[in-house]
Each structure stands twice: as C-alpha cells, then as structure tokens.
Amino acid sequence: MLGNVPCVIKSISKEWEASKEWVCDDKINYKYFVDVYGEFKAPVADCNKINFNSQCKSEMTIKDYMEYLQSSNEENILYLKDWHLKANLKALKRSCSFYEVPNIFASDWLNEYAEDKTEDDFQTPLHADVYSSFSWSVNVVGKKKWVFLPPGEENKLKDSFGNLPLLFDQLKWNNIKYFEVIQEKGDGIFVPSGWHHQVFNLCETISINHNFMNACNLHIVWQALQSTLTEVEKEIKEFESTPEYTTQCQVILKSLFGMDFQSFINLIMHIAIKRIKQIKGENFYLFKKFVFGMNHIKFDLQSILKVIYLIEDHPIFVNKNLPPSLILQLLNMKENILQVVQ
Image (cartoon, rainbow, N blue to C red; front, side, top):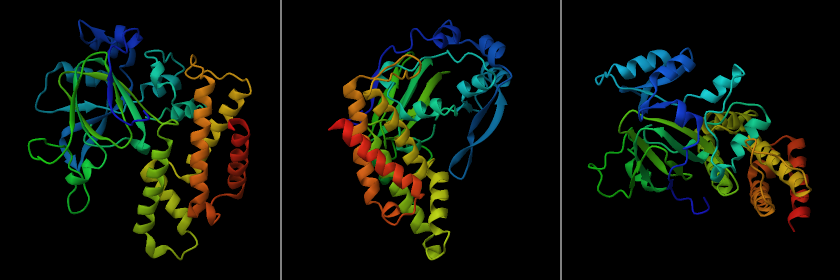
C-alpha cells in the first residue's frame, strides 16, 4: 500500500459463506441466487449500448438476471455491477455474513466511518476508483483479466477534449505502459490509488469489491481532492465575484469527487478521535474482529497530522471559508495528536 503498486493475493476467500453457497460445480449457483436474493433489484449495464462514453444502465431483479445468464444470450451482453448487496440485506435486517473483510485490508477508514455512522458502504470500463481510493476485489467464482495503467499513462489516451476511451485496446496503442493480470477463483486483487484499470470477465464471474482509504494513501486522496477543486474553480471562474462562489464550488466538488472539504475533514477527525482513544486504552473492533496495534495507531495519527498541516496551508482554510466550529475542531485535533504521538 505504501508503494502504491497492484498485487494479487492467492486463495483469499476459501472460508467465505459466499464461496460455499454461491458456487455449485465451480459455476454460479443460479438456484441459490434466485431463492435467496431473487426479488432484489440491481443495476445492470448494457455493454452494447453506449451513451456519452459510458454503458447504458437499467435495473433488473436478480431472478431475471439469473434467467438471462442461463439463456446464453451472446448478442445482448448485460453486466450486473455496483450492486450493494450488503446494504440491501441490512435494510431488511438480514444476515450480511456472506463474506469477511480480509485482515490485510482491515485498515479501511471509509467503511469504518460508514459502519460507525450506520451509513451505506462505500463502494468495468477504463476508470480510476472513486475518491482516488484503494480498492480490493475478490473472485468468488470465475476468472477475470485485468489491465492496469500506472498513474499518468492514461493521459496518453485522452482525446483533444480530455476524454478517455471507453476501452483501452492494447493493439491500437504501442507507447502505453500497462500490466495484464489474470485473476483466478479465490484470488484477491489490490488496486492502488490513481491506477486506471479495466476488467474483462473471461467466463461467468462473481466478485466482491471494496473501495477504501487509510493512512497509506491519505495524502493521495487529499491531493486528488484539492486538484479536483482547482478544476471546478476554473470551470466556473466567471462567477468568482459572487457570494455563493465558494459554497457552489464545494457542492460541485462533492458531486464530482464524492466528498467535499468538510466531509473529508469530518472523516479524518472521526478516525483521529478513535485512534487517540485507542492509545488511551479503549478497544474498537473493526468489522467486529480486528484490533489495531500501537504502531499502526500512531502511524494513522501521524498521517492525519501531516494532512492537517496541508489543510492549514490551503486557501480555503487560510481565508476561513470553512465553518468556524470545524476550523476550531481541526486546530484542537492537531494539538491533541501532537500530545500523544511525540
């Protein structure tokens, strides 16, 4: 994670409930999905229909989608993706134990924050992940081919308007550095921050995925957040003199990036408060089973402290364009962290 490089982790899901219930004879257990999840609706992308450089999406019941898979309809390729099954089950107060977060991915601030706040979990064509976060993906059944582009290589693919192609065709580009990886059943893939990637299902495949961030990529997320704000400010610079300009920039930032400055600060403040309590002896179980050691806790706090210094240097902080109470909380948090990590 500190090196921000992709890797494969073999045989990560052997003990998962999903690996036992969702699979039959090394294929998708269609009957189980129909019986247990059949009435749930999920987003489905039509791979043959493109609109504004993205695949057209609709909703299908799981029952209908399983019937589609079994029909072997090769002309109409439908891809069920971004289904928040865990959120669906939680809403009905049903068990969400179909998988467990692997211990190597347990340092997950996005989902730690979401669980503490009882919010939804944070959760293809060529893309980089939301918030410039890390992500992990585990194949429960099937096989995938991944294509990874190191950060910056995607710029060579952009057209005159700055748009990326929907798919990266290796045969058309001979000056692009990329890595190709085959992911087998049970394998986990770690996707670093800022690495554009695309995924091909080589057969019928089901995977479980998380986006996450932690102390290792906090600075990358911060850089991406402020870079996106700079782009927003340029786009609506003609309104710079209006009273609503700063607020509107944050609204647009949140719609584009997934969070604004205030929500980013609230996130790191929440984590910092918990880590300070942990240093003082309180135990918090993440995903109901993991407890961090003291070195890990201090590393988290030191990373947050570095980003607080960067926030203090940003014009939005210098010009006091954040709520006064939030500015005060951030300054107090800096002092509290200094007291426990020095």
